[in-house]
Image (cartoon, rainbow, N blue to C red):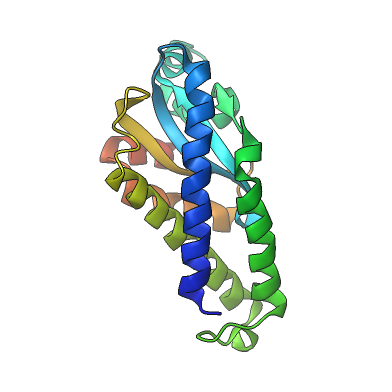
Length: 193
């Protein structure tokens, strides 16, 4: 198997899961709009779901005076939709388990995984997932996924983790700089300090 084949399969599963997730989420929104839609991952890009927040909830969080507004806007523990309908991503998680078997014990036609040091392997894995997530968001944009009544016109996108390590923080930032406007990206950077 080749890397591109694995990426395409993961993209297909992620796209299907996003569409299913949004269909479930629409029934909960009751006229509210989403200001964020991010992949929620655990370390190593495992256990993927969605973390999202409504514009109304963000405005409520911004009105609290005990912490800076940019922190509250991006504090996923405060968001109103944290890993809801996670079951829509079960086929994604199953495939990611298969990917890790390939990455650590398998064979790829176009990459010599055995030749990688531990750090090089992690860089390969991180790059694999980052490129895949970026491609999925690009495809969602092309499909007008974010141009529906469900989303406001300025949506924060990317990946989020509850407690990212230094490597995952860097991945979050690399993805954000590509997907988000300057304002959202600067809020994310300020939130990381």
